[in-house]
Image 1 (cartoon, rainbow, N blue to C red):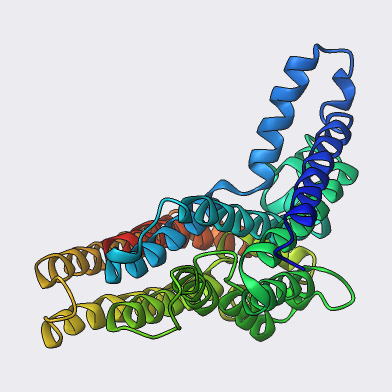
Image 2: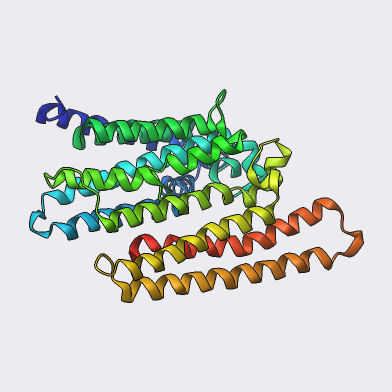
Length: 362
């Protein structure tokens, strides 16, 4: 059924028609106060709102992780590379972006009140995109992603993709809303990453699909094990530190996170420790398995990242110490918590940016 050209053309036409409907509906929800402005300006506003709705940093992560695993599979079997696989590769990337858009979109729909405190620049919280338009977009992302994966990558990858959408749904949507519980949220973020560079499913799923497209059975290799392990531990860092900038809103709306329970400084320290361990293990892997890795690249790169991480941590400690002493005894507890959070994030944001480069360096 999935390989019938007639059905395939019908589905493609249906997806295009749905996209047109989404754009037309979204236009009515962007800039409601300026509905009499020229259509071109409204479309530009829509483009900007949709781009922010997709959370661009997650798209970059998705593209980076996909490219790294596809490239790894192709390097291992250069004789099987065909131009006909290019369309399949881009359709797979688009499906991942759709899944990513669904997950971050559904979270914004159910977090409007919290985002007005924590992330007022997001399009729904800022009033730049209506809730109705956001629902049109997330439904389109889910349907388009499922259709693309179902028609191109078979039942196994479709089941992994569906699992990712399901985990993203129960993370945000009542009555489940697993983000309220630190351990459940931690496990979901570390696992659901078929959509983002955050764990096992992305690496396994993309590598499996690429080998299947090449006509090969799935088989682990040392570099792929290394990439998967590194990014899975990096996912743990994301899972426990992602709420650091959201402490104020999470406390206000009683969302229980590791940051609100254990404190910003402790969580930043734990995340830094896991990331530092990742870099050290990477250097050791290059030393003890030189036949599997480019030691001349892996060792200095990860040593540089480790040193930079330590330097940023020390800088963050200095910022936090200063923020706690400048105000003296007259600074109230709320202000101290805010300053602690700002100091930790000055350090934690840099750590994430450095760690995100490793998918391509390997």
